[in-house]
Image (cartoon, rainbow, N blue to C red):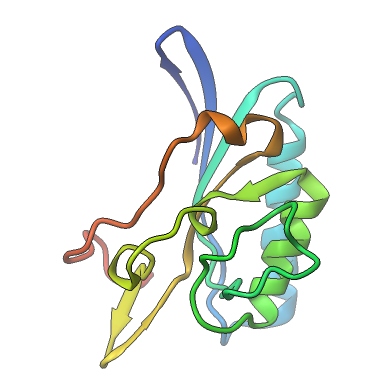
Length: 148
């Protein structure tokens, strides 16, 4: 979904998306990221852009070499899908917002199932607008939607 919100006189382009799950074929994942690239590239660089998405990847806590696109407050270890997300953020000059703010685990975890918890949902914004965001955290509680 792609929409525009006017907040206090400022227009913000918002993209909502769901990436293919970890077990899906790589071709399906590549198609998703290619389409997301196209949508993002369709928003002029001088316009505000926020992506709120279930990206089914783990960017992890270690940001060494990736400081320009993520903070140190991801969750656990990075996986292949998380690396794809970090590469996307670099390519699109975006930051992974919910990794920049120190939070308790309950305010970083976005999915729980069978006693396991993870972070697969992310907020991204253009790096040039990152300083406008004062905080970002997950609200603990039941999810509105189950796994897609």
